[in-house]
Image 1: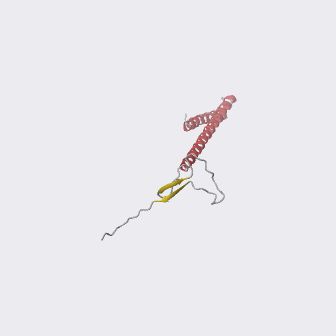
Image 2: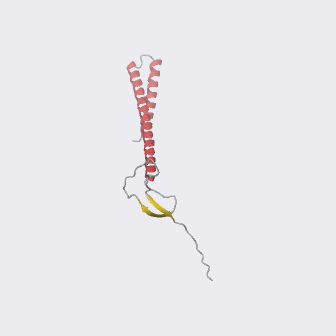
Image 3: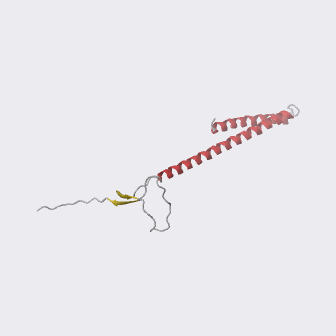
Length: 135
């Protein structure tokens, strides 16, 4: 059963319990002695129980919504982290030297630029149009 269905079911039970208690209470107040006090107490108890079940169903729905939001957030984080697994150059070129192989562990931060080794060297590909004048 879904959380929404649980809330609807609890709401219906709370409504019927409230109506039953109000009717019994009204009769007991109007015609004293006609309805035993125990019946009034039982009806009130049923009303309180139904209200608690409704509150519990609402709480379960809220918890499910928060779990969904957390799962969506984790999914978005995982999607972002997946994008970091691909290295893309900001320019077109040809790799001429490679200093790291697939699966190599690379240190995250190096203190100075002189100690840092590049992962690869590349040269930009530049398109040149040459025209020859033949005489």
